[in-house]
Length: 67
Image 1 (cartoon, rainbow, N blue to C red):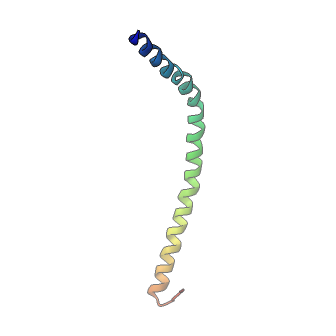
Image 2: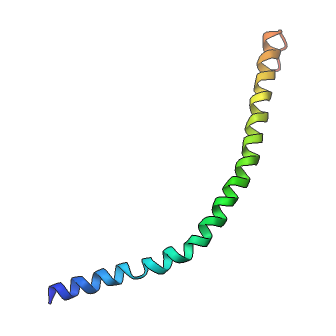
Image 3: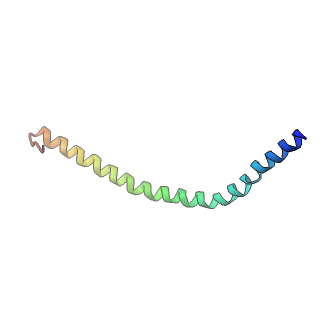
């Protein structure tokens, strides 16, 4: 009896995983393309931040105190 209960328990936990993985395949592609699109903008934002910080350091080197 215990083996049958363990088998049913395993089916109950394993069977829902199969449709979930098939359904999330399409979602994974959409999320991946969204990450690529966001990555382009984030890369530009960080590049601008690095350039701004470099300009601030150069100004401080030449004696311009901003704060």
